[in-house]
Image (cartoon, rainbow, N blue to C red; front, side, top):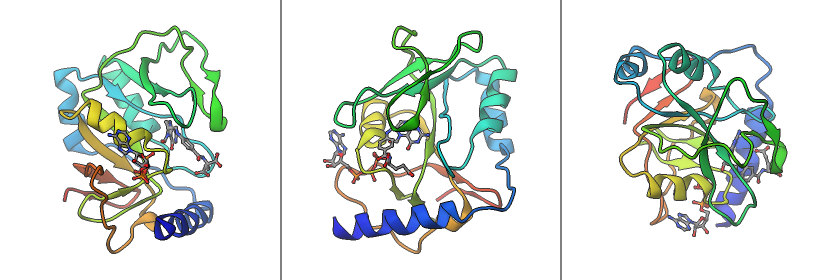
Length: 178
Ligand SMILES: Nc1nc2c(c(=O)[nH]1)N(C=O)[C@@H](CNc1ccc(C(=O)N[C@@H](CCC(=O)O)C(=O)O)cc1)CN2
Ligand SMILES: Nc1ncnc2c1ncn2[C@@H]1O[C@H](COP(=O)(O)OP(=O)(O)OP(=O)(O)O)[C@@H](O)[C@H]1O
């Protein structure tokens, strides 16, 4: 646990040091999946988080429904609510931008996931609230794609019993399929 806390601090510092202008582009594997019109869960980055915006834009162009996490508190699981481009997002906790609480809840087929850290086996370090762990447990059949800067890669993360591994990780320089 202490290890995870220390690693989170180290990974936040690594991420905050990302001053280089870099973009993360959707891969052919992702673009090919869009022809089936999946519901795609994205997120609005906070601070120096890697931006999944080009993935979300490609999904929207392909006619997919985009959903975003709607968080109420650190303790409660979040809901994926439809992101209606015509409706403004509203401010949530932790500086998040999210759909209004009354937006429609939709099950995602693909979950673009923000990461603090990852390894090449698909293990993931998140904010520590268990928010995505619980989302993955609730949507076990979804395609779990982590989005991160390459500097957030670590050699090995030891998974906890509740951790669900990622299917793929996209960085500015790599598409990792464990
Ligand atoms: N952009 C984004 N959206 C997201 C997440 C995320 O990590 N990033 N989440 C992921 O679960 C969920 C929100 N849950 C969160 C839980 C805890 C903290 C948190 O403790 N933030 C710290 C530090 C933020 C940082 O610099 O990384 C804080 O507020 O002090 C943030 C989000 C759903 N939406
Ligand atoms: N499926 C679940 N149901 C309920 N609680 C869970 C579940 N998965 C994880 N948790 C709880 O969430 C807490 C945080 O877990 P962990 O430290 O692994 O967070 P993380 O994976 O780094 O972050 P996150 O999932 O928020 O991105 C743990 O206390 C754990 O008990």
